[in-house]
Image 1 (cartoon, rainbow, N blue to C red):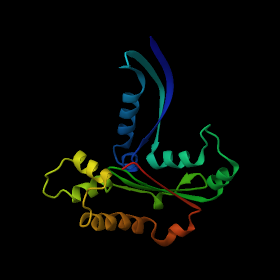
Image 2 (image 1 turned 60 degrees about the horizontal axis):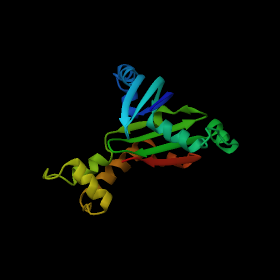
Image 3 (image 1 turned 60 degrees about the vertical axis):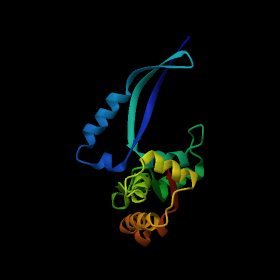
Image 4 (image 1 turned 30 degrees about the horizontal axis):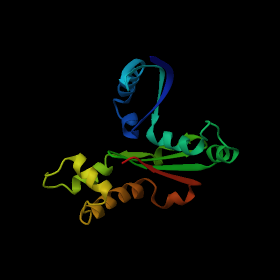
Length: 184
């Protein structure tokens, strides 16, 4: 039995990737890689997926719309007001990056937008100065609650809080909403 679907894809990439000098080439490469036919086997069933189009935005934009839209893809009236007339901040801690985005009246505010490679990977590296563990082993220890963070966490917190201070300072008080997300 074969199952086939055609989908349009919304792909979130790190903010720094979309702002760098190679951003156009990176976006085109991602779109080329993701679009077109894909085939795989799962549970003895061959699956086919056709990606019709690939739209690319920053990961924080995806987090914002996840917060603003219902499961049916609709935006409630109170969320429409928030998007159209207020400032919304998104703060995202991932495995590799910490990203910040502010949207005012539906458009990004460049002075409040940043992305740095100081995500959870950085914390894990700080706990592994001797190099005795792989990143995956440290990640497992972190998730199990068995990783000693007493030395590394204050250093990492200063790096993350330094980024927040640099980009937002005390101006975060003016944001109507701050959406905090993370996959790290």
